[in-house]
Image 1 (tube, rainbow, N blue to C red):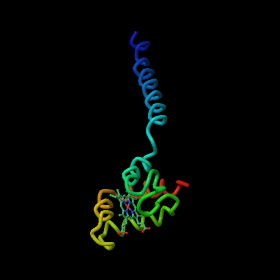
Image 2: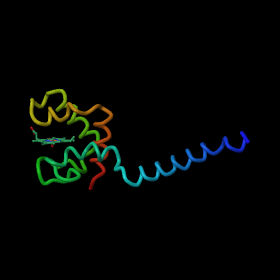
Image 3: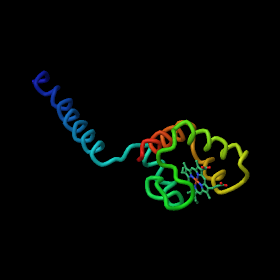
Image 4: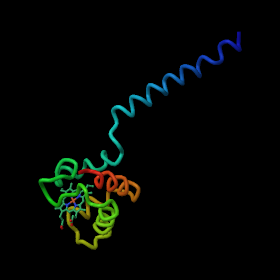
Length: 103
Ligand code: HEC
């Protein structure tokens, strides 16, 4: 009796995880895109303009470097300095990577 009932919660957990994983991959955009969506208001949808400088297609390392410069205040206390402060290094890398792949 005990042996027959033990696998069931695991099977249900497996089914639940499978559903969750497929739903998550079908509906959640990549992390980089979610983070970069904050930029679209001013730099255009997907960073493709129109608006301020086009971001799409710039290299990830260049975008990351520019964001770190804004963050450090070297570029002055402009809107980008404030904006860049809201991101961790990992987040900047993820959004720079995503933007660099937009054509
Ligand atoms: C509220 C508007 C606004 C938002 C939101 C915004 N930007 Fe900007 N961005 C600007 C403005 C304005 C400039 C020009 C600043 C300057 O040159 O002093 C700029 C410049 C830049 C530049 C420099 C481009 C170059 O060629 O010199 C980069 C890189 C950049 N933004 C990246 C981003 C990223 C990445 C995001 C999202 C995380 C973002 N921006 C969100 C307004 C915005």
